Every structure is written in C-alpha cells, then in structure tokens.
Image (cartoon, rainbow, N blue to C red; front, side, top):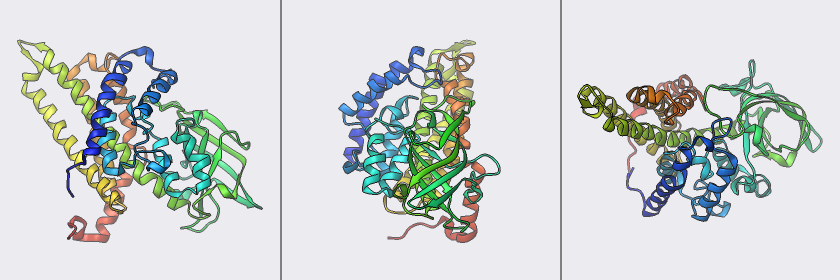
Length: 400
C-alpha cells in the first residue's frame, strides 16, 4: 500500500485539528462542561455540532448522497485519530460510537425507505441510535449462536421477546437495531430489526453503572415483552442477522482503534509537557533516561498501531474483509491505549491520578477497550483459526 494521503484528506485533518484546538479543548479543560456521566453536557455539544456542520466537518464516514463527506476508511483513520485528541472530539463531528457504526451499517444495508426513516435523522444529529445484540447469561455475547431473544413471524410483523444488555446509548436513543433468533438454522437463524424508541412492547430495565465515563445514553439492559416490528423494518432480510453483525462490528472495531490512537497520543502529549516542566533532584523529568525510555516505548507502539490500522483501512477500501488486519489492530491498540494512560499517569505522579488532567478519565475508559467489540482472547482465537487455515501464507504479500 501507499502511505501517502490525498490533499483532500490532509485538508480535513488540518481543519479538524484547528477545530479541536480552538473550540473543544477549552471546554474539556472546564469541569463545568461535563455532565453527570462525565461526558460533554448536551447543550454544549449542540453548540459544537452546529459549528462543526457549518465548517463542513460532519459525518466524514458517510457518502455525500447520505449527507457525509465520503472520505473512505483511510481518510477516516487519519481524521478520527486527529479528532480524538480530545475526549469530546468524535461526538462533536458525529463520528462517535455507537452512532458511527450504526450509520455505516444502514448506509450499506438499508433500503431507501429505511435510510430516510432511520439513517437520516441520526446523520443530521436529530436522533441518537443504539445496537442491541449482547445478552446476559445464558444468552449470546461473543458467540451469537447462543442468542436467546426470539422474533416470531405473525402476519406482516415479527413479535420480539427476550433480554439484551450493554446496549450502548440506549437511554438517549430514538432509533434501535436489535438482533433476534428467527429459526434454529446455524447460519441463517438470526435476523436484524429496526425499531423506534416510541414503539410499545419493550423497556429499559436499568442503566448499568460502569467503571469508566459513559457515552451519552450509557449502557443499558433492555427487556422485550412483545415488541411488534413490521416486516419492512427487517434489515437485509430474514435470516441474515449474522451477516448484519459482521457488517456492523468489523468496521466499528477499526474505527474504535482509529479514535483510541488519538487518545494514546494525547496521553503522550500530556506526559511530555509535564516532564519538560517538572524538576526534581536537580534535573527535569524529561532529562531522566527512565522517563525517556517510557515515552520512547509508547512512541514506537503508537506507530505500530497506526500502521496496523492503516493497513486494515486500506484493505477495506479496496473491497476486502480485513478480518485478520482488524483483529490484529484491535488487540494491539486496545492494549496500547491502556499502557499509554498508565504510563502518562506514572510520569505525572499524583497530578495524573487527579482530575487536573484527563488522564484518569482516559485510564478508566481504556479498560473497556480490551472487551468491547470482542475481547482480546476472541480476536487471538480468530487469528489462530486463520493461521491454521492459511499456514505459511498467513504472512504473504499481495502480488501485482
């Protein structure tokens, strides 16, 4: 692959960098900007989003015909990394989970009517969305074949019964995707449905409290007690739910990594700034070899993450599935983010452990990175399975 980016992508990157510096970082530095769940206050977010739209920095991931900028995965990798210099960055540009992955899924799999009803208001920022797949034991998690939630066909509708949990954003979402079992077929037994928050037959049982700061809408447990969904709100078609989850989760894993690289770089930025200013025992922290080794270690690990992410993005842009590349990136960058936050806190000492910087916020947030969209161990199992199948060609190069 060619690592040269286009001038158009670079233009977006530089404008995003300037926007983050001028408009977002000052808000992030003010504790009054945070809501009760330690995310940006909704009123401030709406102001930032209006500015971002006015500057043409909105929905980079979608095609122009769907209201986006059509940057492709490579362009997204460059820009998502830049926007997540701030913890408030991605949501400002409508590029944050879970809306980000949900919008890309609807763009790829939705009908014209579904895009108008479901995708358009989320793209425009008038609605938020949630993806409900994971279930409490004994239901499906990383293994969707264990799914317990069912959808029974009754005339022109499906009636959904069951329970989901850790549905991100559900408490503030107006548009939902839920995956349910429609048959016992091992390959085509699942189906994905679209529904609106105002429909009867479902409820939020609880908003699950978590270790880290929350996305808007939190992580919720949902109960389906006869939700009726019209057949026209099936995504793709009956029995293609497994395909829908693959379409949804593969690119979303990679966009997580794109954003996490920005946070890892921010950790290094804060650590370097403090090390340059802090003196002890007659010298700056930055002049101590131990600190230099800590920062040098993060520098090369971040660059490895960037290369893994970019290779996966390039493979997706040229029409590949990038299963191997995405799993590698997910494992590496998730662990890198946690290490970057931990190292930066160590260099900052008690200051890093306090709320005087965003390091403790990032540290708590980072622990979930090794779990969301597939735990480390699941992705390592995927890589082992591919290694078993491909043998020495696992490490092959494409030939022109």
